[in-house]
Amino acid sequence: MAEYVAKPGTGSVFKNENKTEDWHGDYTGTITLPDGAVHYVNVYNNVGKTSGKPYLDRKSTRLNSSHT
Image 1 (tube, helix red, strand yellow):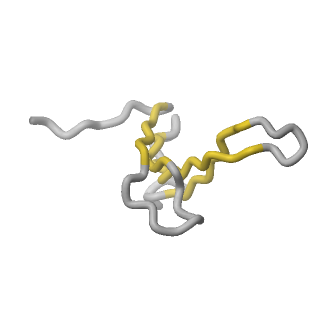
Image 2 (image 1 turned 120 degrees about the vertical axis):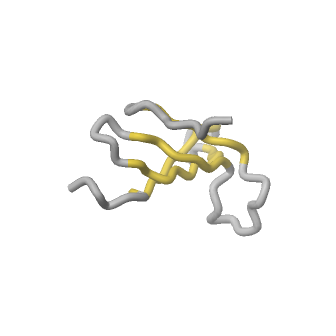
């Protein structure tokens, strides 16, 4: 089977089944930006301090440094 290659501007995250620390993302994955740079993504389930409403927070780190 061929390896999946993400199109620029798309990405995927999946439930983190290996989460062992609070700082580990609840969901992890990658996103490919329009310029072709790939970023690792962590998504966290959170609750607003004042509203009490649930929301998702995202943090990303660039994986490849071939694009400047």
